Length: 268
Image (cartoon, rainbow, N blue to C red; front, side, top):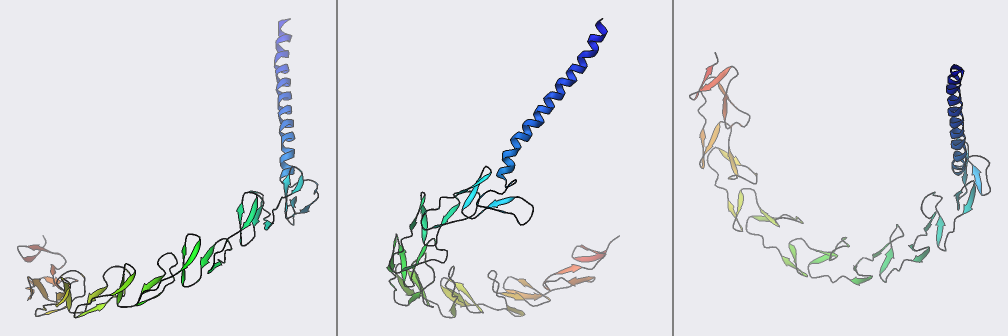
């Protein structure tokens, strides 16, 4: 009698599992219905239009999805609907800025104009911002109006440098010239001269040398076949089986030769 009872237990368990799976599938389908409706599927509601591709529908401009319907976006005065599903659904018109749930006019001070973006202002040429107003730029002597709206609004003429609220002359030593640089040294020495304590002293050029414009070093370098020793250029004593390197001021052994005691010997 116990054998038939044992056989029915697995069958009852299978039926129970089948009912659980069926209920789960039904619950998922039930929960999915509102989501599909919110995604713009099903019957096209009022204030909506069918999509041109892919099926479904989208709310008209000024409306947004709410369940299976399209509800009007509350657009304040001086604003426009954006058609975006996120955010407030509206944005302020050009010349206005958001203030809570409203749009207020951007205050543009005297001697200023609204930027092309429409959300900020800029002072007219000849004026600079000072808090919420535009004040005249006081132009010192030997200066001109610049396009830098964040600074003083002016720059010094060539040959002058700003100092406090004035443009003072740049003192250029003899044999020097203006660099016209906005940063760094205002002057540099002419070719053949080097800077020393605010002066431009001549470069002492030894025999068999030529001027070198590198910012470091003595200002000259030796010709090919000569090497610098102290302040002179002496001929390079080139041993047998050697050649000048790329610089022309040093030498190295030929291939297959190795340096040993100042000579280039054949490797063994």
